[in-house]
Length: 130
Image 1 (cartoon, rainbow, N blue to C red):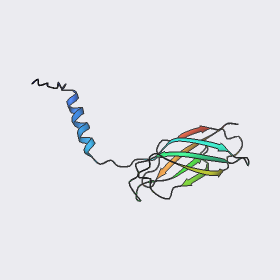
Image 2: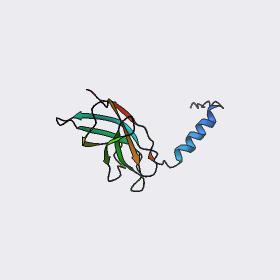
Image 3: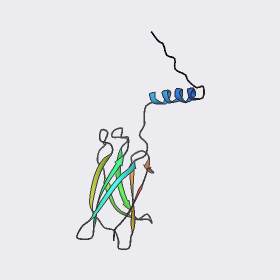
Image 4: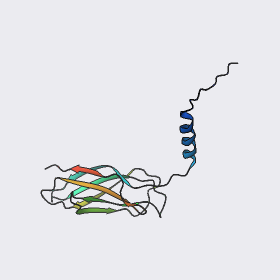
């Protein structure tokens, strides 16, 4: 029978120990991130946005509860309110139609909100085709 011993470098031991300790700690939901989006322009000139959000929803007290379409100056053009947590559906995609964006606006910013942290996760900038 042959026994093999693992060589552990002393520098990597503290890192391995910390990784092991951290993997045992509970994971808490952070900020809601917009991870993908697409849009279509309707015949009436309004837009439909399909926005994918990632957030480690924990239940009714802490979940991603809305996303917005804003202009570069912060003007809110549209918002989709999310009425329930998506604990087992991550990331998830929801749509909103009828969003009016003024002529001359060349790009919009999509951002997501969660009940505990508010705004602040990853945003996505979309350049609008003319």
